[in-house]
Length: 444
Image (spheres, rainbow, N blue to C red):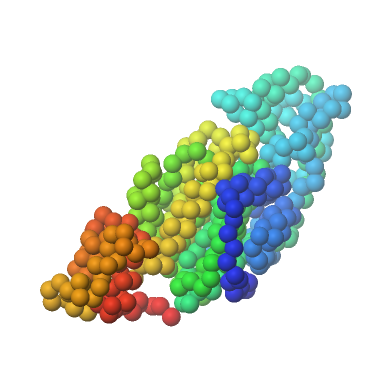
């Protein structure tokens, strides 16, 4: 069971981008993988910011078409030259060891060592990130210039790891709203020292969770998942069949800290409310962005959107994965992620939440001709005559399209106005009994 938390009193961050970056810096040195103590330590740190439940599923557990793998832990990994000096050392960078490497300790020739080494010839001073989750192997990752400089001779290789039955661990937080319908926020939390992929998504999701907790009751319930990539979402889906129907909207967060413009990948449905809401927010932000169609590869959205579930879950990122050279390399470091980009990503998510929370379908209670707004004092709210001025065009658009078939987001899109303007107009019209709410199907 996930922890259920009643929202406390409101609190705000002084500089959210700096705070998010600070959390990334704290998590950066931890050697994470899809299982193991590094993942647990990461969740322990996150729990100082948001009250996550930590759940564990034993190795060997069938989950859909998969099986929870053995747990991997590592204490040390190095390559020593003939003088006994560590020339590759996981204590300097946890990217130096291929994740899920089986234990090994022996002496090898240069040729054999190179057969177990990975480098990036196109970026000779960067260390690549490599994994061997489901195929027992061992390996080291190092800068190509260092690999090329290795001399003939014998080398000592040591990977002090364990790969044995244990658990898959993940973090979960459910914040209850006034309905049981849920907004799902999911991020993969399994990579080692990679800041944009994946710590930017982890840190932004953590601060979003804190905001939802601090900002008071909402219509939707919010479920935050901090999971290992692929196997984590598959395990969660397998263990939560009863919860899945409650998911009304969802976002996978990844790659939110680089300098690129925001990109959104639609859900498999293509026109779900989450797709409409994110597209609307990005369009009205007035900055460069891209909305992309769904593809069955990428992050965990491909699991949530698999045809047996077909959940309305999209993916928000800045530069998409694989489109920047630093992706899955040591160059994805603390200098690569920027506080201002993190703050913008965070604010975009909150704006999407606001649209989802405020969107509903209304019915005009005086549909025969235009109701007289002046005698109701509604024109006093137009322009700059009130603290929250209402656009006359917004009032007229809402009145005309509130026919029980158009929700407020559709009206905003049709009018070419920001959702907030349409929502303000609707609130004013509801207050004057000119609109009534059409009950939402399935809401409870």
